[in-house]
Length: 250
Image (tube, rainbow, N blue to C red; front, side):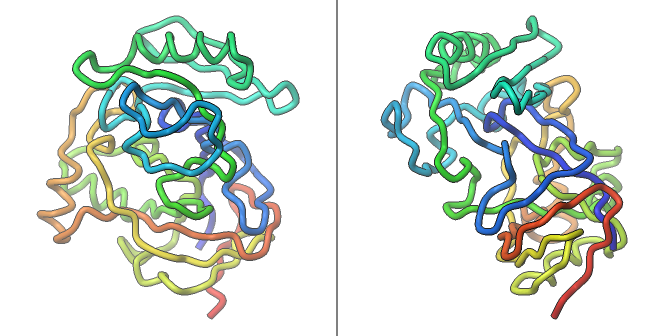
């Protein structure tokens, strides 16, 4: 097995960024991944809270498909995020700055579905605002993506699934057999903890922000579930890079 690609998502559900390498930290989410999230007007989250909260509190692609077409680029030295989406002008912000945070909310509101709760305010997560309530990365399998694409009847982009680490050299859906086991990925060690159940965001083309594939129906028809990918925790930090070997340790 090898590591085929790396992605991070600095603002939850608002932009994906491909990477060539990253240094993982023990017991943490991926650096600069889901650092911020945009709470909506019905959120049961207090402004300024750094506590983890379920995804139902936030603006996301399952509610507003056009968010799926956002691309992000982090300037780590300056703590700024550059965002682009085909339907609106680009935006460059420091989400920790109050004025920039308001600009980010207004920018996101222009992309939000009008029938959904409106974006309201930005929160900065203490552990990374992943969909799991403990610090994880998501590990996905390119062979599973190809198999699902065959079931749907068209190729599917990695960005639909907002994963962190993508593997090559594993049979389709064999990643589910890794739950409870440890992997060496580059210089890091991770433990596979559980399968990921998917939502309607994966039905959206990440180039256009339009729903164009019944991924959930295809998963149910082909495999009897809505799961795609697995969560992992970092048990021994280290640098990982595209092309690194991935080894089963137990």
